[in-house]
Each structure stands twice: as C-alpha cells, then as structure tokens.
Length: 497
Ligand code: SF4
Ligand code: SF4
Image 1 (spheres, protein in one colour):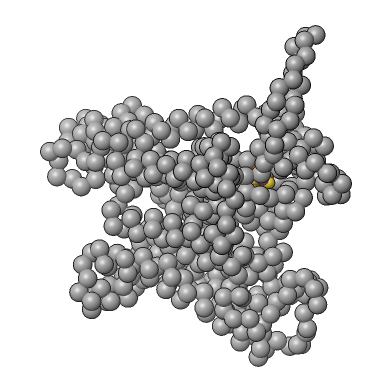
Image 2: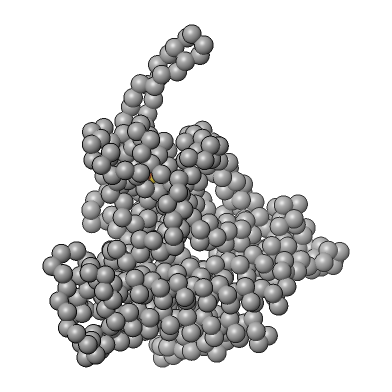
C-alpha cells in the first residue's frame, strides 16, 4: 500500500484539522440548505400531477439524486471515505464531546438496529414515496439531524453512525473490498507506544509560537469515535476514516492509501449481525434493481400479492408484506441454493477428506446455513457494489441535466411549469446516449461478477492456502444466481427497449 501522507500537499491537507472542519461544516450547511428548499413544498397547488417537484426541487434532487447516488462512486474506490466528511457523523461527534458520554451497551452495539432502520426506510419509501416529495425529504433530513444530536447528547463517540445509519453500514461492506485503506506503518511501533495518543483522546498542552512569543493552549484530542485501535484493524468495515488517529499519532506511524482490490477479503468472516444486514441489503437491492424488468418484478412480488389478496389487505398491508418478503424471504431464496451446493459438494464429492488446521479460520462443512453464510456472503459484496453503481450511474445519467435548473430555481416550481406547462424550456435529456451507456452498464456488471468469483475463490481458501472446492462452488453458485437476475434485467431494460 502506498502512502498519500508522503505526497507533499496531499499529506499536509490530510493532517490539517482545519481543512477537514471547513469541509464538514460546508457540507452541513449544504444539507441544511437542501432541507430548507424542500420544507414547504409537497406538490404545486392547482396541478393534478402527484409528484411534480421530484426532479426540479433542490431537496429531492439534491438528496436522492446527487447525494445518495454520488456517494456510491466514492465507496467504489475509497470505501468508507464519505464518512470522513459526512456532516451527520461529524455533528454526532461534536455533540458527543459535551454530552453525557455514556458507553453503548454491548447488546445494542451491533448491526441489528441499523438493519431495522434499513427495513423501516424501505417501508416508508413504499408507503409514502418520500423520495418523490420535497417536504417528506426535508422531514427525513430533519429527523436524521435530530437523531444525530440526540444520540450524541447521550453516548460517546459516533453512536448515530453505529446504530442508526444504514449508509455507513453499506459503505462498511463495500470498504471490505475497496482499494483504499488506513493502516499503521509498523505494528511493533504501536506495540511499544504507551500513550496510544492516536485513539486515547483527552486534553493536552499544545505549544503555539508567534515570533519570539510562545504560548500554551489546553487543547482537546478526540478519541477514536468507534473504539478501534489502528494497529489491530483487520478489515475496513468499522473505521469511519475520520482521520483522527492519523492527526493524533505523534510517531508518524500511520499510512493512508491504495492497495489491491479484495486485498483483505477472506481473512475473516462477517460478524453475525453484519451477515443479517448484508442479507437484507441483498434482497432489497435485488428487488429494486429488478423493478424495471416487468416479468421479473411480477415474479418477485407474486407471493406477497397473493398473500395480501388472500387476507383481503389493501395497499398498506400489501406494502408491509412486500417489504418483509424482499428483506427476509427473497434473500433466503437467493442464498440457500449456494449453501446446499456447498454442503453437497463438500460431503459427497470432495476428493480427499482433509482436516482443518487446528487454529485460525476454519471452514466447517458441518456448520448450519447461518454460520456458513457469514463466510459465503463475502463474495456477494462486489456484485452488490456493481449493481449499486449501475443504479447510480443510470440515475445520474438520466437526471444529471436537471442540475442547472435546480440550481437556478431551488423550489423547482418555476422549472416544472416552464418545462411542462408553458413548454418554454426543453426537458433535459440524458447526459450520455443510452446506446453507449448500456455497454458501460454491462461491463460494470461483468466486472462485478468476475470480482465476485475471485472473492469466492478467496473465501474458499483454508489456513493452509488450499482451496476447498465445495466452498468455492457454493459461493460461486450464490453469486451466479444473483448475477443472472441482474443480467436479465439489464438486457430487458437497456438492450430490448
Ligand atoms: S456512518 Fe453514516 S452518519 Fe456516520 S459518518 Fe458515515 S454516512 Fe455519516
Ligand atoms: S481508526 Fe482512526 S480513522 Fe478510523 S475511526 Fe478510529 S480514529 Fe477515525
């Protein structure tokens, strides 16, 4: 891994606390501006159209199109780097400095709450289409800011990031494979360091000199907001890249830079509840990706539709069933075949029964589905990232042309009327022609699938470095099934139009 800190100006900026504070403050102001633009706008009075402001108002456009789609590309190359500038995480940490500083109880400090938030978000999108209405979007931003402040007031560190932010958990998964990482240069140096200034926090005297005048200032150093110790980092899912440790370390022992893709994948399996989060994400992303393929969509939503009819439930009940189905039932249906293949291949066709080495990561063929899934799930990550990037790319390409209109008229009312009623403005078209974009999309999917297969091979290695073919075929079956659904969607969506 090279070290960006060694590059002169880049290193200076990365080490400077003030440049980061300025950037985070600017993004917080931008978020407030986005919320303000949507506050009193739901529709346009007098018009029959349901959601006229979806792409012309700054709140809906700025938050759902630019913000939520743009961060996917940051995750693609830089893992959790968005978290280093995220205004919500920053605000959470700022408030926590002067709050009650309670420690999160162990039973809550996992991915369960964030998984529930993800499911609830999907439910309110289905029920209220919040992404289509500026005022609903503004309320969502307001609620997030309130929760950020509230969790900061009670708990130390970034409790909001750990407990309530699905975006951070998604970035954490993508960071496991991203070609970017923060690590220590030399582990023995950390072992011999008794201050652990990088993550210990607390107050210290800082010397300030101005000419011959020298003064001392009782400054405060932030502890690691997620209770990590850089020398013990084994994957990148938890580190929010706040760069606090890098700025605190007085032995210049940190490095931040690029490494090969998948460099550390397969060294460990997912934590129990992170596996649950990935399962829910897999179902949601697959259902949302397949929405544009009408036949596939009908197939996916057939079961909740039938159950809702049987129970006589209306739209609200159906949406609840649909969300439960895509977050729990569908992902099970997608992942169990891979596990069955693994069990069959390992128990019946493995040529030489070979015991696992006594220590370290063991591949236990007798483990149940859930235990195996925590390892077999890792190869889904590149494919999910590819699907996420495709959705973001297509959305930004389709709606990127609205940006000048949104900046010129943040409320979106005049722009909508000019485009659709007075027809004085031509509706913005796509940025890049679909004939070109469809090949880029196809390449992205193929790349994601290929990297997933490489990841399948990584997770099938045991401690001796030998490949367990049953594991490989199980993992490969899982990702192939999902990739086939994505491919069918892309062909119907972009190639047979
Ligand atoms: S976890 Fe969420 S709130 Fe926290 S810094 Fe990352 S994106 Fe922001
Ligand atoms: S390990 Fe360092 S960069 Fe990561 S969250 Fe902790 S202090 Fe921030």
